[in-house]
Length: 221
Ligand code: OGA
Ligand code: MN
Image (cartoon, rainbow, N blue to C red; front, top):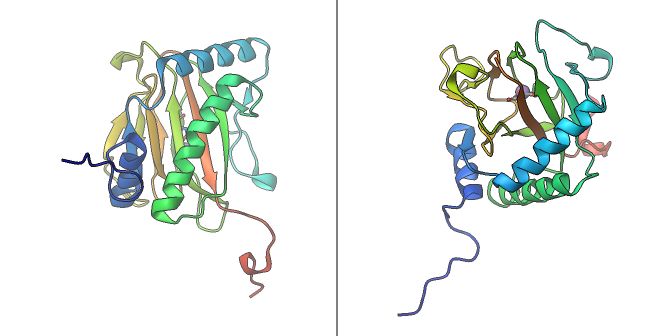
């Protein structure tokens, strides 16, 4: 019997295919062991080092003119990924493969990624929000990765997820355990970071469509 080798196409059952399936069928997906413990450790070490050097800043909400700091909406501090370390490059390579897979299957035209480290101190939270509103910004697919190795239920800090923009009842609370990835449609899925009772580290990233000033992207009506 010849061995059946699946190369491309078809429904696979690897982590990336499961994420694509989740995006397609419910608008979100959770993968508990997406990152290796080695990569998690390296990224966590980088966060601690750079935070000690004072490189993180208080998180802001909104874009450009609307940019503001609002301690009632979120309380965390962030640092943009810049590809300056080996750990970041490994992560970015991982996410690049996910981007390509999503485009190959869902034709979302994801063009690039922006991402930041986020540190929620005890008492940190981020109230229910959407990552993008139609036309407001180019974020299409959100990814969140967690770097917390010994997270316990009493540490709180879950990511609460609602199934659609108007939903009142949440579908899911995701514990921010090391290695877990959550992926969702930025304009469709409201989410909230519940108050954390221990230091909580995440990486939030957004796959964006091309926002270039090409004529067909900005009709003057
Ligand atoms: C965000 C966000 C979730 C998290 O930064 O927009 O929703 O768990 N982050 O850090
Ligand atoms: Mn968000």
